[in-house]
Length: 299
Image (cartoon, rainbow, N blue to C red):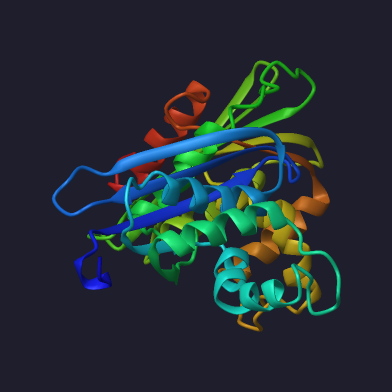
């Protein structure tokens, strides 16, 4: 069958693990013309972020019963560059890198290469956690697949901080809410920010919530945002070392808030927990309600 006669599909994929390496999950959304989206997901007990990103693409392509023309959208630069820049060289060198070292995750790259021979795939990169509807859905599928770790909600000597945000493009504004608990004491706070994105509101919620603490504390922080958690635990040190610039030498988005969060992270001992809004602690939903009320101008 000629390429022009192949059926078409758009696929969004995502994968990750907590911690890295550790238990992981992958998710994929398949968008066929005039059909409901198809959702796929899976998990592994011990893996890495990159292996889950690769697995998501492999399993999504394997799910197609016949050759297709595929637009595959990923937020993994590792996967995108591997396919478009590195793969052919690896194969010519017998699955060795340019420095003559064995290619990492060779088994998955070979499996993905086999699927590429079956389909006609166009690759597209999208920035993660930037509001892309189906990228966000793939991220949620991956997060749910990897399972929910136990939460230390009964740790009596630590502060427990629950964060929620709301955002409206029509209002061009966002709201944040925070619930802070220590033993039998509780404090709540919320606020509204004009012209703020969803990701910025997650940062604001963390900065404002931690700002409620009057002395250095041991904190369990609960959020629905993996962007916030990954930034605070994995990316922020490198950004700071590069003068608050990304690996491709671009200014870090929301650098003002990341600087504040980095300072607060040195003041407090923070353990980060990403939770699901529907199945996580009730305080997460209450913090979201506070954020929504602030966005709408309610007291």
